[in-house]
Length: 261
Image (tube, rainbow, N blue to C red; front, side, top):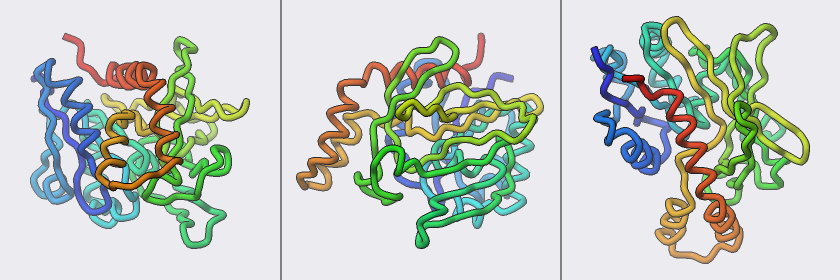
């Protein structure tokens, strides 16, 4: 049976998913793959993660509310789906959620989170944020903790640019079978930014980057806020200059989950 749908998690804790949904539709609809949303109730009670689902995207937001809604039963449903041939793709909070252990803003008292979410699809600790390395604010839900970052795709050594907003880098467990797809390039320091791991017949991908966020989508946010923000404008201009590189990175990642025909 052909897997012909992609599901995006949309429930308590998720941020605005419109950019992600739009980017996925632009890439997958021409291939005959529909993009829809789902929630914890459908995962747990309706077993929506079945053999029709090509990939399940866990987007940015907050991992703690994900765990509060999905609990052990929801995690087991997701794990079973992946091990039976599905694909989990976690972005930012979704990447933290997939990992063995979350270490988030451990040096910021009001933001510190150290926990295990129990999904364990990525055999690594997810550690963030990179606010010191990027010279931005500890995590906020505005432009003050956003930055354009350079990452290197290891397979071809090409450098790309993407939007960063609070995501992790990954510290693989000893002997971990995960593969690093891309690394942050931070003043000579290289840290795993995007990783992939086989789980049974399926795979899990975790990205500390918001590869779905184009400069145009961020500019639309700024216009909606109707305010001048020099920091935000600087971010957007840098992303505009590197849009072709961001788009190429997005395509490389999507090719990892595109079915062969």
